[in-house]
Length: 160
Image (cartoon, rainbow, N blue to C red):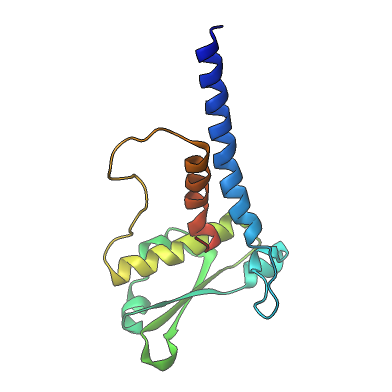
């Protein structure tokens, strides 16, 4: 096999590893405990994690959310309990959801992402995305792959 082909294949593997490392690093950041700040709920056992309410404050009338829950949450069907209450300080509505039974970490991440998407849909009318990049194609690099791995994981982990 010619040397340029070997180098290209090695670069592709390094880039793929960097993307995985970026997503993994972001997941690990959730388990870092800072004095006085607390710890992320993703470290709870499956039963406790499923029963924990996850909430976002949405700048809208609470009645609007009660009559028509946002699509990202209705996609879960009857697996979710949804609660809507006035947000403290007249800041809109507090939209909260939790699972009715045991779930995986992946499903909890999907719920967190769905809450963020619901907030964006109600407040802005669309979910803003980082990808695809509007400036065209760029050469893959290990640093870029790590950033893309983090960007992919961010909606589920709540960091970045």
